[in-house]
Length: 235
View 1 (cartoon, helix red, strand yellow):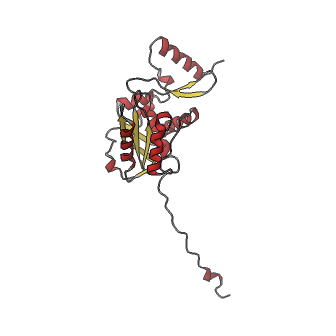
View 2: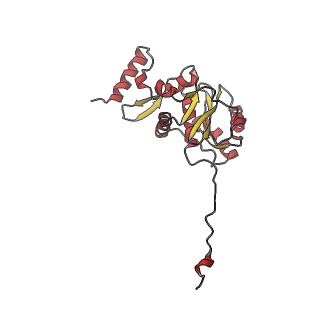
View 3: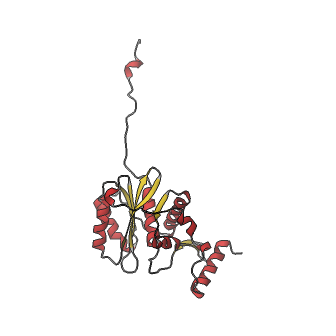
C-alpha cells in the first residue's frame, strides 16, 4: 500500500511530465501561504547599514544556474534578509571578489558556502582568507539537504526569518518539492527554469545554517572574586 507522499509524488510526476501541468500546491515543500507570512516590503539594506551580527549563505553556479549570496542580519532572535546578490554566468574570480567584499563587512560572523563540485575552490579560498571558524564549506548530500530544508521550513513556521516580497524569490522557494524515491530515500529537488534551479532557496538555507550553529562573538566575564582571607578569619 502506498502512503500519501508516494501518491503525491506519482501524481506530480504524471501531471508534470505527461500533462504539462505545474506542480500542485499540495506537493510543494513551502506552500505560498507559508511563504507570504514571512514576506516584508523594504527589508533590504546596503551592507554598510548592517550593524548587528551578519550571516551569509552562498549557492554557487556558473553557466546553467545562478550564484546567489544571501545575507541575514540577526536582531534578537529574528533573522532579516538584508541582501540577495544574484550573479548570472559570472567568472569565478569575480564571484570570489564579490564574496570577499561581503565577508569583509565588520558585522560578519559566519558564512556557509556551497562547496559541492564547482564551489569547492571558491569555498576553500574564502576559508583561507577569513578563517576556518568563520567560513564553513558545505558539501551537499541528501542528508544535509534534508536537514537544511526542514530547518528553513521551521524558521518560516515560527516566523523567525523574513524575506523580500518579490515574485522571483517567492517562486524559487515554492519550487522545491520533497520526493520519496522508489528506494524509500528522501530527496529535495526543483525543476530548472528561467528563474533558476532553487538557487535562492539553497542560498537562504545555507545562511540559516550559518546563523544556527554556535556563531557570534565570544564574551567572557569574570566570576565573583573569591576572597580566601575570609576562610581563616578568627582562626
